Length: 112
Image (cartoon, rainbow, N blue to C red):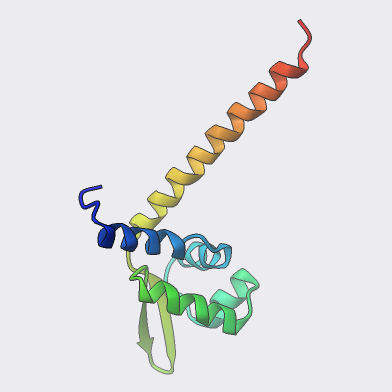
């Protein structure tokens, strides 16, 4: 990290806080394939319309998602696709850790 001042770290913490909710990750994952309106996100995620709207508002507030009116509809899209790189790094790390744990368990189960 470049700036480790309390103000900068608070912004980093807020960014990760937004990513710490499963429903918001579902919305982001849904938007990975391209812009969608609220009803398309509702159908793809199984979340309620009010819930999706609430999460979109939070994602827009931190700049992860943007909205684009088109006629009578509003479409949402990911503003910063690098967010998916971050998610992949985290998923890879979790996968590596779980594999190591499974190997440790297997070692304990295997008689010598």
